[in-house]
Every structure is written in C-alpha cells, then in structure tokens.
Length: 345
Image (tube, rainbow, N blue to C red):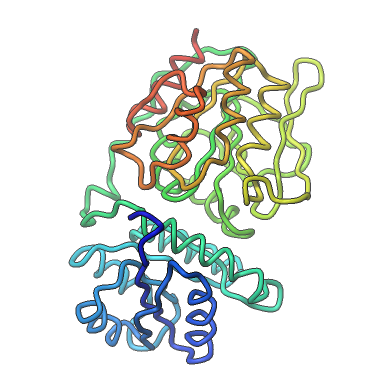
C-alpha cells in the first residue's frame, strides 16, 4: 500500500487508557486513521468485519482470549497485518517471539516506566506504516514446519557473514540461520527489534539451529559456528585484532532511524573484513544497510539480496539493489545456500 493513502487502523487493548493513548498518537500522522478500538478479541472480530482495517495493533494480555490465541485464529481465517505490543520484560520477549511465529509482522514495547509515550509514538507510527505494506497470507502447518535441513559442512578461513533485516526478518532469519551448517563462518546480525526481544529471539534461534546463537555482548569473538545478534537499543560494529574478529557494542544516535542499524554494522564489516566477508540484506522497510552493503561489495565482499517475491516488505533489499550493492538476488530459501557457496570461493 502506498504511504500516500490513508492507513485504517483498529486498536485492540483491554485498557481504555492505552486505547486512548494509542489512538491519539497514531492519529497525529496524516496518513493514519484510527477507525475503531476494541477491548478484547471478541469485539475486535466483529469490528474487523465491519470496519475492514488495513492494520491491527494488538495487546497480548487480554481477558476472555489472549492476543496470541486470537492472532493464530485471525491469520488462519482472516489474514491481515498485525503489530503486537508486548511488555519490556523477559517474559514479554518470549511472548513477542510467539506473536511473530503466529503471524504478526511487527512487535514493539508498550509504553512504560522505561519506555515513554513520546518514545513509543514515532516507533508505533513507523511500524504501522511498515505493516501496511507487508504481504500476509493464510497460515498453515507448513509455516512452522519448514524444511530446515542444514547445508553441507563448509570449509572456510577467517570468513565473516553479516546479515541485516527488519520487518518480516524474524521469520526470514529463522529460515536462513537454521540452514547454516554447524561450522558456518562467524555471523553478525542486525535485526530491528526492541531491547530484551533480541535476547529472546537469540535464545529461540539457538534452540533451532546447528550453530550457537546468542545476543551479542561487548568483546564477543566472531568465530565459526557462532551467530551474534545485536542487542536492541545499541549499535554493533565488527573489529579486528590480527586474524581475530570481535564485536563492540556501543550507544550513539540512530542511523537510518534505527538502533541497532544495519548500516553501522555493514560499514564496519567493509572496513575490517573486506573481501573475507559475505553480506546479506533481507526483508524490511526503508533503506537501512543499502550504502553499507555497497561499501562491503566495493571492499571485495560477496553480497546477497532477498528477492521481492519472498520478502514481507521489499524495501531494504530494493534500496540495496538500486544502489548497486547486491551481487546476487536470491529467494529466501536460497539465501543460506548462496552465502555458503560464496564463503567457499
């Protein structure tokens, strides 16, 4: 959906105060119209049929039926873009992962003591806009039972994989990382997610993959068989000491409206890994990482861009392709294979 068109939003939350706040914040944007609110999934069901919203914002802790159960039913019978709001807690992070598995295209933290309404306002608007452009489909059992056969073992020396993703990236990264062999090159990832959610995502991926996956910490070494995911709210950069790669986690201003930013990571990979790197840019809204991936390619790295057909939102890969940063376009189910082949060259 072009962003010049009005995006109709239905807000679902059991708190009247939260419904009021979210409605007011979303209505500040001229491209968004809050067409209604609902206190629980049963009322939401009727209003979806009546109002036909483009995007749903959904609380997860509600009476009569929790948000995850409702989301599962919705994606099976009436698929539509959903932004899930969850608490900024370890349990909230797990809930966010469950929501993404159930079909949500975006998750974000509810405003609270450490996350003000002002901070949430712009993020919520951007996520609703991203969700409005997302391709959603009827969920089936095959969505949660994809073929995740790891690729053949790959022999590499001092190689680094760098991946960036945003909207739809949790599902995309799950498919890519679970196909990596146990000794895949050390991998660094930026996925646009709030703090705490990235740790839950890393823990979930770790349990599904042949490689070890963890939320990155300052000074972590980039070694074969390990994947490091940038923590939400901080930038991650690659550094090198002799033949050894490691990451630094740092604060700083947003880059491309994001923190962590793919651009920041890719530029550091271009500088310190050069031709020893393979970069991939996956589904997401905006252009974060396009210039950084170009810098990687100019430094001799092989680069991959997810194709339009398999993207939830063909924004970041398109921007990278338009910039001349993408050496090879690949469908999502071929991204891991393509990266492994590049690592062997």
